[in-house]
Image 1: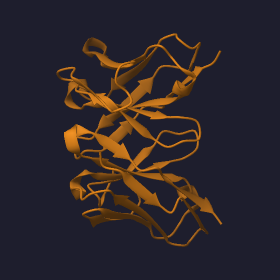
Image 2 (image 1 turned 135 degrees about the vertical axis):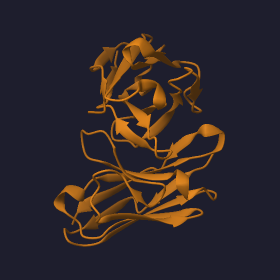
Image 3 (image 1 turned 60 degrees about the vertical axis):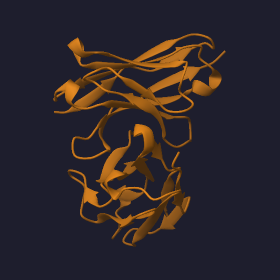
Length: 109
Length: 119
């Protein structure tokens, strides 16, 4: 089973700053199978990025994804107040199984 | 519009069973597999497994084999999650989520169903 490790666990930043979130896989994965989600309190997760670098429908261009192999990054160029949330990476892999990372909480400093 | 609407919150005693529904609308139900995701209070997302909506073939993640059953009623475009022999640790929000046609990601999510198991 592939394990996804996200870092940091919590990121404290101010609106307008740049956020960089990391997702590391326990082995190399296809970038086609790496996605990022945003979840706000009391809400269902929302798809942000699929295929490691493709923004989902309606996602602002301040969100970007990159990476390959076992290291992937979600960047938010200029934080807006509504961006403070928990972010999860997800991969699809062996035996048609999915796994999620443990999440990164992005909080207002 | 494309949406998944789940059944309401459930309060159950240990040992009971619960069945959560997820009704799809706005798209062809059989075109996208349906996933189930668990989120315990204050915890992260845990993928439980999925069911193909054209053949009804389920796949269960490790830890969700035995007491958890995925099923379909294609006549009403609805997926179901049944949990038997409920335990306190099953207390969580359960989400259904559709696999995107573009890539192996979940583009549409239900609103979640809170299942509380208490004695």
